[in-house]
Length: 59
Image 1 (tube, rainbow, N blue to C red):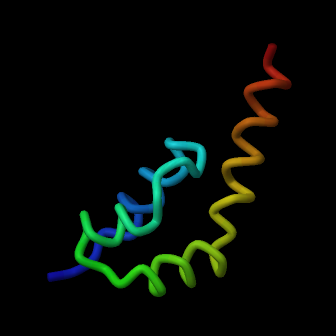
Image 2: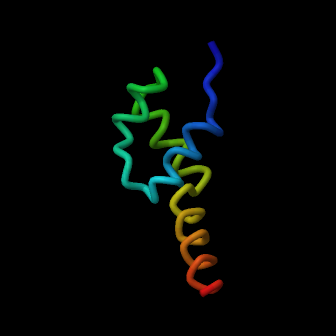
Image 3: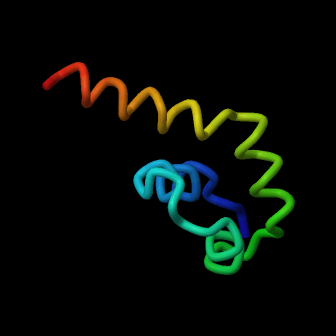
């Protein structure tokens, strides 16, 4: 079974980082350390910050 990283990342970003990584890991059958590494390497938090900044700029 392949892991849908786009779906995991989307869930994390749409929650603005409020979803617990442990929950994501359990829901998708992935080790929490793997999600943590991917989140860091792909800078998911930067994408959250950028989306918030874009929303604020549009106001």
